[in-house]
Amino acid sequence: MSTLPIRIYGDAILRKKAKPVKHIDGQLQRLIVQMTETMLAAEAPPAVGLAAPQVGRLMRVIIAREDVTDDTPVHCVINPRLVEYEEEQTDSEGCLSFPTLRGMVRRPLRVLVAGIGPDEEELSLEAAGLLARVLVHEIDHLNGVVFIDKADPDSLRWMIPDKNEEDGYRLKPTGLAKIQEVFDRLRQKQ
View (tube, rainbow, N blue to C red):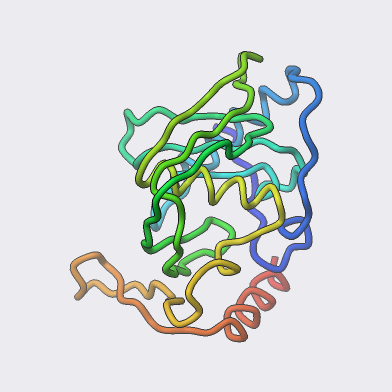
Protein backbone atom coordinates (compact mmCIF):
# COMPACT_ATOMS: atom_id res chain seq x y z
CA MET A 1 0.00 0.00 0.00
CA SER A 2 1.30 3.44 -0.92
CA THR A 3 -0.26 6.27 1.06
CA LEU A 4 0.58 9.95 0.78
CA PRO A 5 1.00 12.50 3.59
CA ILE A 6 -2.10 14.65 4.05
CA ARG A 7 -1.56 18.40 4.19
CA ILE A 8 -3.13 19.97 7.25
CA TYR A 9 -4.79 23.33 7.68
CA GLY A 10 -2.39 26.22 7.37
CA ASP A 11 -0.45 24.62 4.52
CA ALA A 12 -0.57 27.22 1.73
CA ILE A 13 -1.50 24.67 -0.95
CA LEU A 14 -4.94 24.22 0.65
CA ARG A 15 -5.78 27.83 -0.25
CA LYS A 16 -4.63 27.67 -3.87
CA LYS A 17 -6.80 26.96 -6.90
CA ALA A 18 -5.97 23.62 -8.53
CA LYS A 19 -5.13 23.48 -12.22
CA PRO A 20 -7.16 21.47 -14.76
CA VAL A 21 -5.71 18.12 -15.81
CA LYS A 22 -4.73 18.21 -19.48
CA HIS A 23 -3.49 14.62 -19.93
CA ILE A 24 -4.35 11.38 -18.19
CA ASP A 25 -1.16 9.35 -18.05
CA GLY A 26 0.47 6.68 -15.92
CA GLN A 27 1.63 9.25 -13.37
CA LEU A 28 -1.93 10.51 -12.87
CA GLN A 29 -3.25 6.94 -12.66
CA ARG A 30 -0.68 6.22 -9.89
CA LEU A 31 -1.75 9.38 -8.05
CA ILE A 32 -5.40 8.28 -8.18
CA VAL A 33 -4.46 4.88 -6.72
CA GLN A 34 -2.36 6.54 -4.00
CA MET A 35 -5.15 9.00 -3.18
CA THR A 36 -7.61 6.13 -2.89
CA GLU A 37 -5.26 4.13 -0.64
CA THR A 38 -4.64 7.24 1.47
CA MET A 39 -8.36 7.87 1.91
CA LEU A 40 -9.12 4.22 2.70
CA ALA A 41 -6.29 4.08 5.26
CA ALA A 42 -7.59 7.09 7.18
CA GLU A 43 -9.03 6.32 10.58
CA ALA A 44 -10.79 8.14 13.40
CA PRO A 45 -13.16 8.80 11.70
CA PRO A 46 -12.84 6.92 8.42
CA ALA A 47 -12.72 9.15 5.34
CA VAL A 48 -15.20 9.47 2.47
CA GLY A 49 -13.35 11.89 0.20
CA LEU A 50 -10.03 13.41 -0.76
CA ALA A 51 -8.88 16.12 -3.17
CA ALA A 52 -5.46 16.26 -4.84
CA PRO A 53 -4.40 19.50 -3.06
CA GLN A 54 -4.78 17.66 0.25
CA VAL A 55 -1.88 15.42 -0.80
CA GLY A 56 0.18 18.30 -2.20
CA ARG A 57 -0.88 18.18 -5.88
CA LEU A 58 -2.48 21.26 -7.43
CA MET A 59 -4.54 19.20 -9.85
CA ARG A 60 -8.31 19.07 -10.30
CA VAL A 61 -8.77 15.49 -9.13
CA ILE A 62 -11.12 14.23 -6.42
CA ILE A 63 -12.18 10.88 -5.03
CA ALA A 64 -15.34 10.23 -3.04
CA ARG A 65 -17.47 7.43 -1.67
CA GLU A 66 -20.95 7.25 -0.23
CA ASP A 67 -20.05 5.59 3.07
CA VAL A 68 -17.19 3.86 4.84
CA THR A 69 -18.08 0.22 4.31
CA ASP A 70 -15.48 -1.89 2.50
CA ASP A 71 -17.65 -2.63 -0.51
CA THR A 72 -18.60 0.99 -1.22
CA PRO A 73 -17.33 2.06 -4.66
CA VAL A 74 -14.85 4.92 -4.80
CA HIS A 75 -15.63 7.49 -7.49
CA CYS A 76 -12.80 9.42 -9.12
CA VAL A 77 -13.60 12.60 -11.02
CA ILE A 78 -10.97 14.52 -12.96
CA ASN A 79 -11.73 18.19 -13.70
CA PRO A 80 -15.06 17.97 -11.82
CA ARG A 81 -17.75 20.59 -12.42
CA LEU A 82 -20.85 21.11 -10.33
CA VAL A 83 -23.49 21.22 -13.08
CA GLU A 84 -26.70 21.20 -11.05
CA TYR A 85 -27.67 21.25 -7.41
CA GLU A 86 -30.95 21.42 -5.54
CA GLU A 87 -32.42 21.56 -2.08
CA GLU A 88 -30.23 21.82 1.00
CA GLN A 89 -29.01 19.72 3.86
CA THR A 90 -27.16 20.76 7.00
CA ASP A 91 -25.04 18.18 8.76
CA SER A 92 -21.80 17.64 10.65
CA GLU A 93 -18.70 17.60 8.49
CA GLY A 94 -15.04 16.89 9.03
CA CYS A 95 -11.95 16.86 6.85
CA LEU A 96 -8.68 14.91 6.70
CA SER A 97 -6.86 18.27 6.59
CA PHE A 98 -8.49 19.17 9.93
CA PRO A 99 -7.95 16.03 12.04
CA THR A 100 -10.60 15.60 14.77
CA LEU A 101 -12.47 18.84 13.93
CA ARG A 102 -16.20 18.82 13.14
CA GLY A 103 -18.67 21.54 12.19
CA MET A 104 -22.17 21.98 10.79
CA VAL A 105 -22.17 22.90 7.08
CA ARG A 106 -25.04 23.60 4.69
CA ARG A 107 -24.61 21.83 1.34
CA PRO A 108 -26.84 20.84 -1.58
CA LEU A 109 -28.95 17.73 -1.00
CA ARG A 110 -28.69 16.60 -4.63
CA VAL A 111 -26.01 17.34 -7.21
CA LEU A 112 -24.99 16.53 -10.73
CA VAL A 113 -21.21 16.55 -11.19
CA ALA A 114 -19.58 16.22 -14.61
CA GLY A 115 -15.96 15.53 -15.42
CA ILE A 116 -13.66 12.86 -16.75
CA GLY A 117 -13.13 9.41 -15.29
CA PRO A 118 -9.75 7.71 -14.89
CA ASP A 119 -10.60 5.75 -18.07
CA GLU A 120 -10.55 9.08 -19.97
CA GLU A 121 -14.31 8.91 -20.62
CA GLU A 122 -16.64 11.84 -19.93
CA LEU A 123 -18.71 11.10 -16.87
CA SER A 124 -21.78 12.44 -15.18
CA LEU A 125 -22.40 11.56 -11.55
CA GLU A 126 -25.76 12.16 -9.87
CA ALA A 127 -25.60 12.05 -6.10
CA ALA A 128 -27.78 12.72 -3.08
CA GLY A 129 -27.25 12.87 0.66
CA LEU A 130 -23.76 12.14 1.95
CA LEU A 131 -22.19 11.56 -1.48
CA ALA A 132 -23.51 14.93 -2.69
CA ARG A 133 -22.00 16.55 0.42
CA VAL A 134 -18.66 14.84 -0.15
CA LEU A 135 -18.46 15.79 -3.83
CA VAL A 136 -19.14 19.47 -3.11
CA HIS A 137 -16.69 19.45 -0.18
CA GLU A 138 -13.93 18.03 -2.40
CA ILE A 139 -14.69 20.40 -5.31
CA ASP A 140 -14.40 23.25 -2.78
CA HIS A 141 -10.86 22.02 -2.00
CA LEU A 142 -9.97 22.43 -5.69
CA ASN A 143 -10.94 26.09 -5.40
CA GLY A 144 -8.96 26.76 -2.21
CA VAL A 145 -12.07 26.64 0.00
CA VAL A 146 -11.99 24.58 3.21
CA PHE A 147 -14.98 23.42 5.22
CA ILE A 148 -14.48 25.86 8.10
CA ASP A 149 -15.07 28.67 5.58
CA LYS A 150 -18.65 27.43 5.26
CA ALA A 151 -19.24 25.94 8.72
CA ASP A 152 -21.39 27.65 11.31
CA PRO A 153 -18.61 29.04 13.57
CA ASP A 154 -20.64 28.24 16.70
CA SER A 155 -20.83 24.56 15.68
CA LEU A 156 -17.08 23.89 15.50
CA ARG A 157 -16.07 21.06 17.84
CA TRP A 158 -12.99 18.93 18.54
CA MET A 159 -13.54 15.17 18.77
CA ILE A 160 -11.93 14.19 22.08
CA PRO A 161 -11.39 10.43 22.65
CA ASP A 162 -13.59 9.25 25.51
CA LYS A 163 -14.23 5.54 26.18
CA ASN A 164 -17.25 6.46 28.29
CA GLU A 165 -19.10 7.87 25.28
CA GLU A 166 -21.12 5.66 22.95
CA ASP A 167 -19.24 6.86 19.84
CA GLY A 168 -15.87 6.68 21.60
CA TYR A 169 -15.43 10.45 21.75
CA ARG A 170 -16.99 13.61 23.12
CA LEU A 171 -17.24 16.97 21.41
CA LYS A 172 -15.51 20.06 22.80
CA PRO A 173 -16.49 23.51 21.45
CA THR A 174 -13.76 25.59 19.82
CA GLY A 175 -13.34 28.76 17.77
CA LEU A 176 -11.50 29.82 14.64
CA ALA A 177 -8.60 31.44 16.52
CA LYS A 178 -8.00 28.29 18.57
CA ILE A 179 -8.20 26.12 15.44
CA GLN A 180 -5.53 28.26 13.77
CA GLU A 181 -3.32 28.05 16.86
CA VAL A 182 -3.63 24.25 17.12
CA PHE A 183 -2.84 23.64 13.45
CA ASP A 184 0.07 26.11 13.49
CA ARG A 185 1.59 24.05 16.33
CA LEU A 186 0.90 20.78 14.51
CA ARG A 187 2.60 21.99 11.32
CA GLN A 188 5.65 23.13 13.31
CA LYS A 189 6.04 19.59 14.67
CA GLN A 190 5.96 18.03 11.20
